[in-house]
Length: 433
Image (cartoon, rainbow, N blue to C red; front, side):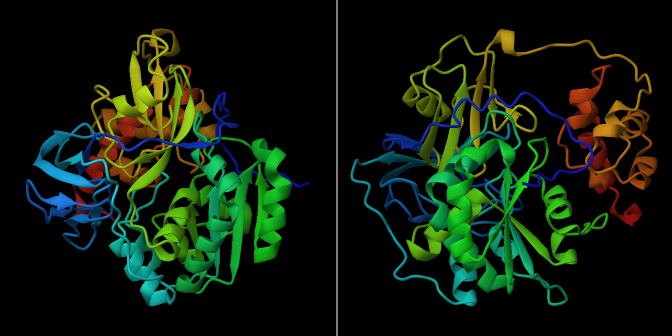
């Protein structure tokens, strides 16, 4: 069996503690705090008032601007407040607090979405965003520019981020539903071919996935377990041999890539008539019972952790997502949002603090960069405020995967520097090519 991979990348210890743990459904929380900004673009505008009675699935936030997303209540109950609250991004975001009435009364769409136009409208109405972490509104991705076409879609089942097993469990437990969702996407974008990329660390369930894929006429590709194998440009290159140009999009080479969770959400919206009100989250690390849990959007981290038995040690860091690209949280009073793929708890022994040294020009960061950049030079240019030089070295192509910082023997904070450099470059649009 051919196992494919890409140039560069690193191999951190995967620590897939929950790999064999089936998805559990968490009971309805007594209260949810739902931020109105859980996606790329503009925040949603609230369309409910305090003391309003809502059902699970009632729209509480409406699209505002060209890039935005609808937001729905995840439980049935009463709106108790609409005010800024700290979100998992670290900023205060206007949020809707809802107290459960214990009924879980659900508001569903009246019928299935079947035609391409209906599917796009349903995906928009359901508030579906990229659930791999990017959180871009999916209806925009499905609406191709007039001068672009897609002949291949790729389902991203690699999940190369350490600890996380959400997509692994979904593709194992909801294979047919996910493939049905892929068929819906293909009908919208006009693709004739569907490929599924799966890491070779999931080989024990491959026969079942391949058998169902054959029924659908899909192709399964086995990819070497390496980080960041799940990034879309790497997937496209490995599976199709096509290279997305610098500053370009996958549709420029006739491909579109979708996260497993996003495809499942599309299936639920179109076939089961459900808006996006819940998602599966991997809860792992220093918790007593690591699990893959289906959680209502807006559930507090502390409640999810309590459902997993509570902390097994004094927490020193809580990360939303994985250790490579996740976001550290100030405390556990933040909410699960659409982009929350994992909750990782670490104690003091798990965290390594290093003193940063000067670059020794060893080239290690260059050898692992999956985008073929020179991270050490980019970091130097940013430190010296030479943002135009950083732009010329394609700083905007950096995906912020963290491979360079992971491998650097001088422990330079390269990702932080590059993130800052990208912000400065974006603030000078006239100089952008």
